Amino acid sequence: MARMIALVPAAGTGSRFGAPSPKQYLQLNGKPLMWHTLAALAATPGVDEVAVVISPQDEWFDDFDWDLPKLSVHRVGGSCRAESVANGLGALACEAEDWVLVHDAARCCVPVAAVERLIAALAGHEVGGLLALPVPDTVKRADADGQVAVTVPRKGLWLAQTPQMFRAGLLAKALLGMAAEDITDEASAIERLGLKPLLVEGDAQNFKVTYPRDLALARAILAAREER
Ligand code: CTP
Ligand code: MG
Image 1 (cartoon, protein in one colour):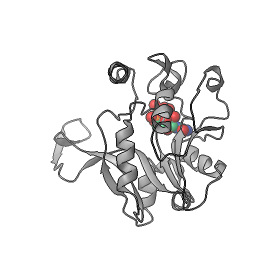
Image 2 (cartoon, protein in one colour):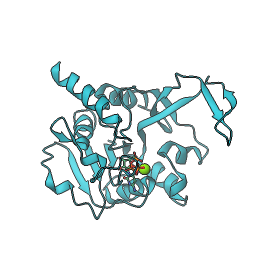
Image 3 (cartoon, rainbow, N blue to C red):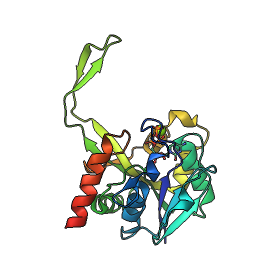
């Protein structure tokens, strides 16, 4: 039977966050930020393995006690996210038909229910798909002077999240032979093969910690869950 492997790229430096250590290692409610990410994936029924990809130069991972089931660690991160994912795929002992759920380490508040929704929606799907949210606000395109050039109709526009779930063989093929810096998510690599990933309703709590201002919200969401 096909396995379900969560692949977590965590080899970034967090340059926009600007902390002394990469943002995935910042303390958040008593644990490293990425612990919450890995714990949610490990707690998802149907996920067989949680494979985290860290940088070969990583100086932080071994300082913490991860203490999570299903976890495997791969020191094969690359110079951009797509390269870390491709290297991780190569390091995993997986079959072409295994499912891979690629999820950003920095999306530490991902609800288990959202991951389950993605897995359920894609059972038997030919291509695979991703969590995403319909754009809620009015969208403007700016001109070079920062003025509104045009209002873009938001109908049909979605914001891509992760996990993004594809068969290992298809994903490896999609990532192969492309300029990795051009690939901002797995779905866009699949789309370039002429295939159409399924959009599955994500969750506003599943945002990516990018700037210091994002930490307060992540802290509040995780604390509220602990109180329940
Ligand atoms: N990532 C990775 N390898 C890279 C770059 C990014 O595995 N060479 C991972 C990050 O660790 C993160 C995810 O991809 O979990 C999403 O990337 P992003 O939020 O952009 O994180 P960083 O690249 O670390 O941050 P920044 O772009 O601000 O430097
Ligand atoms: Mg980045």
